[in-house]
Image 1 (tube, protein in one colour):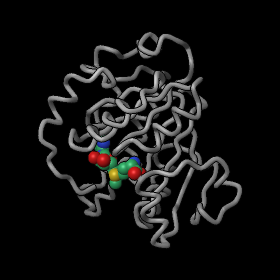
Image 2 (cartoon, rainbow, N blue to C red):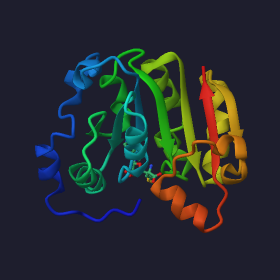
Image 3 (cartoon, rainbow, N blue to C red):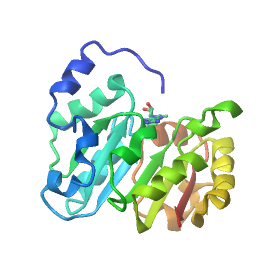
Image 4 (tube, rainbow, N blue to C red):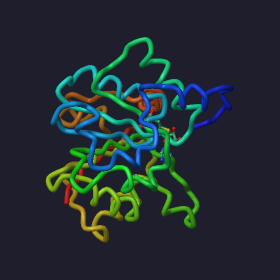
Length: 212
Ligand code: SAM
């Protein structure tokens, strides 16, 4: 994502009640934050938040947490929440590398990765969100029957993600190399900002659903 520095975004985030501040202190206490025992689903790299906000609006009995590394991007999600607040959604500004210090074992019911940064250089492979290093982190926080759903238009990243499954001990449940022409997998699909952009250019969208 191309980043422009948005003046004052750090300050707005620091003041926002839609953001969980010092999230390490909330490990194991996420159901208290939401005030119910509904499942908790997270999107890592939520960008401006369109996908997770649409999901939260459609599914009031599921709790959502959107994670984004950059203030200048997260601020857009906060502005949308101010216009249309959702009680079942919170945001965190953090690098997902620290995800296991935020959520306890089995605290998360599902993880969404959408159009994750490709990090094309081999030496940066560990930074890719579907890498085996990240899969190990997800393994620690997901419920035993929890799934990860990953979408991208990047062929190389998708191939890499598929190759990471076996060494990391994950199982491929479903996949498609052209989501928008796959009637079954397209059912209930919620578009992300990047998905709209790239599919309108005619790029095929890859998707997998995996479990342990
Ligand atoms: N998911 C959105 C979509 O599909 O429209 C945004 C996609 S954008 C290409 C990837 C986003 O992931 C960026 O906003 C980036 O800052 C965020 N991101 C990348 N690595 C991250 C990490 N390690 N932790 C948290 N966010 C990350």
